[in-house]
Amino acid sequence: MHKYRLGAAFLAAVAMCLACVVPANAAERDEHCVADTITGAFRCFDSVGESLAAASAGEVGASATVISVLYEHANFGGASVAVTGSPCVEGTNQTIGYLGSMNDKVSSFKTFYNCYITMYEHAEYQGATQEWYANDSANYGSDMNDKGSSVVYSRGPSRAELLKDCGRATKTCNAHVDQRGQDFYGEWNRVDTVFNCSANKITQVIGKRDTRSGKNTVSNEISVSAGFEFLVQWTVAYKRTWGQEWGWETSENVETRIEVNPGYWAGLDRSPVMRVGYGSYDMWYDKRRWGHHQWYVWNFSGEGPAPGVVGQTRTVGKKMTTDEKKRVCGKKTGLVRSSALAEAETAAAVAKPAAPAVRVAQGPLHS
Image (cartoon, rainbow, N blue to C red; front, side, top):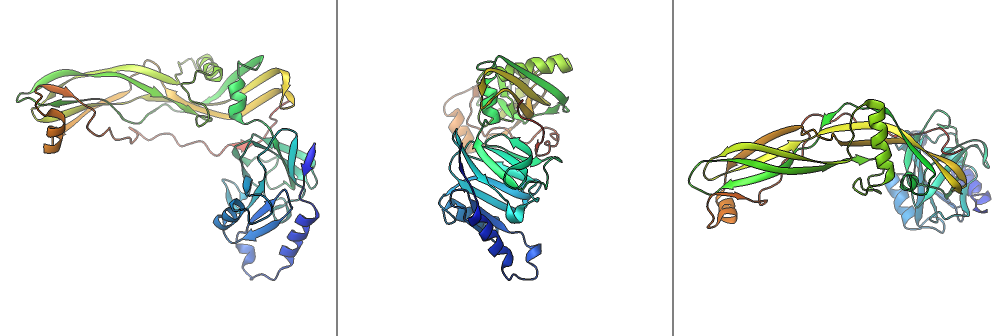
């Protein structure tokens, strides 16, 4: 494969930087640098904002495209190196043969532009490796934390790309729901709103079907309503493992009988029961995909509304303002349904379980 490498120019730049006369507190101050894979240019700044602005403006090297950011500490903290280059395409690698001042210090990273990252334990792509998906972010696990010395970016799969292939381009695709989180109540949502435009108290059944959707690790790329096979496999695996139904999108009939005083509005809100699961996928391609038959998708998580369970409901209401009465009632009398009123508050009904920690890049992605 053709390679772009940071060679002598990069090492010279690092050496010059280390040889500079710096303030006594420089060791305590985080450096934020830019490394260009095309020209080997390397330059440091006082803040991450400055380094990313310079990288995005093409002020360091030949590229204005940030394909990755490497961080000194877990959860994307501490010193950093913004890596610039070209969007990753098949058949081309972009490399940094030695990480210089970040050698044996990288603990977390982010990748963009379809760039799949392979971190090497030693300089010039030697020693143990840890690969991770394109367009992703993670903390390094114990196998590579504070051990990386060189890095390669190539056109490899993102987790969304692998999951889209599940059951379509793969021979087999299996979900494994290894851990179940505590059920919790989701956000309140307004199901129905009525306005009493009459001069009398009215008793009425209000409500309708309320549809809720879940979300997962790749929700930004793949909608849960798209009907992909990997969502079906997760549903089957959850029931098989935990003996309960799982829903990515459910629709429940929500109704209640309510008394509405004259000149008042009343609303019915719902907070559904949400289920949380964590696990992985393994899939097999008959023909090699991204160089391999077997691929794994680690650190997958999903939350979805429990099928067949209404959850919590509440009724709310107050006296209409003059403006509301004018807009909603006009010359109408009786009970009027309208969406003119603001939606229900979106605060969670009860505290949602703490989000899982930033995913850890550890273990093989393929075999």
